[in-house]
Length: 506
Image 1: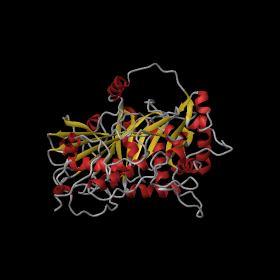
Image 2: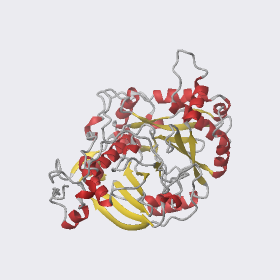
Image 3: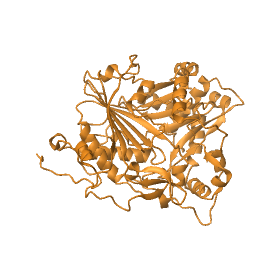
Image 4: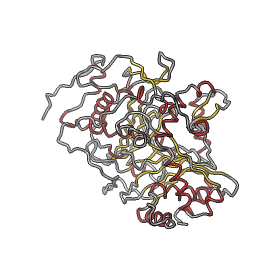
C-alpha cells in the first residue's frame, strides 16, 4: 500500500483545511479501471427499487453535518497564471441563464468516503479553475469571472432511512431540493451536497452556475471529478479561452433578428428580495404545477419514428429520434392544454454550437456554446396534422442555427446595441408560466452519466424540482432499456389530460 505518500498542498491552505482534505490512502488508492461508457443501471439489491410509480409519500429528513469551502489543489502547490486574474465572460456566456442549475445523482453502495470525493473535487477544480472563482465586474467594466481560487461549497448530509423509502423517484418533487444546497443568492459557482442514506446509498446534488458552463462543459467536469476521486489523471483537460474565442468579424455581418430571439426589451420590475421571492414562488407553484416523468421505451420510440417518417420520399433520410420525440411531446402537450386554432405555440430548443461553428469548437471547451431554435406553429394546425409535420418544423428550425447564425449573433452581441438599447436575454427563469409555449433541455448527448467515483456510474439521474410550467427535460432512460425519460411540467389539470394521451401515436 501507499500509506507513506505525501500530497503537496498550496501554501495558502491553512492547517485546518489540509486536515479536512486528508484521506486514508488505503481507502482510495486501489487499482481501478478507466471509465467506460455505460448506461444508467438499476441495482439488484434490496436497497433500492425503481419503477414508474415508485413515489414516496413520507417526509425526507435531511440532517446537514457540515458545510465548507473546497479550494483547488494543485500538483505543485502553485496556481497557474496571475493571482486575481479577471477572465471576461463571452457573449455566449452572458446571453444564457444567470443562475445555478442543479442535478441529482444516486449511487448504490459501496461508495468511497466523503473525504475521497472532497479531495477529488479539489483536484478537478485545479484543472477547471473558473468553477472555483467568483463572478463580478472586471476592471474593464465587463461581466467576468475572477480567478481567485475562492472555492466551491461542499455540504455533507445524512438521512436516517433507506433511499427507497425517502426519495420520490417518479419525478422531481419539492423533496428533491433538499438534496442540493440552495441555489438562490449564492456566491460559489459550484455547490455540491453529499447525502448518505442508512442503506449505504449516496445521493450527489450538484449545482453549477450556467454562465460558467453549459451542459457539455459541466458533463466534462463531472467526469473529471470522478477520475480525480479515483486518483486517475483528470480528463478531459478543459480548453479555457472564453475571453478571446468568440471575437466579432471585421466588418460585422448581422444577418438575423437577434432582438427577437436571444434578446428582448427589459421589463419594468420592482426590486424584491430574491430569497423570499423563491420561497413564495415554490410554495405557490407546488399546488398548481406538477412535474411528471414519462417513460418512452425503445419500442415506442421506434414506432413513433416510423410513423413520423412514413410520408417522406425514399431519397430523404428519416427524422431523428430527437426530432420525432420532441414533435410528439409538443403535439401532446398542446392538445392537453386545450389550445386551438389561431394561437401560435413555439418551443425553445437548446442547440450546441460546438460542431456547427467553423472551425468547430472543441468538445473540451469550457464555457457556453449554446443558442436556441424556435420552431413555431398554429396550435390547431399542429394538433390536427400528423407528427411528421411537427418533426419537419423542428428539423428546419434546428438546422437553421448553423455557423452563419452563431457568427451573426456574436457580431450583434458585440456591437454595443444590447447595452445601448437596454436589451436583456430572453433566457429568463423568472417566467414561471410558458403556456402556450415550451422550453426544452435535451441531455441525451451529454456525458452526465460518466460520473464514476469508483463503484460504477449512477443508477439514477434527474434534474432538480423546478415547477416552471411548460419546461421539458429529455434524459436517457434510467431503466437502461435504450429508451428515454421526459420530465414534463404542466398545470395539474393539463397534466391529467397529458397522461391520457401521451402514449398515443397519431
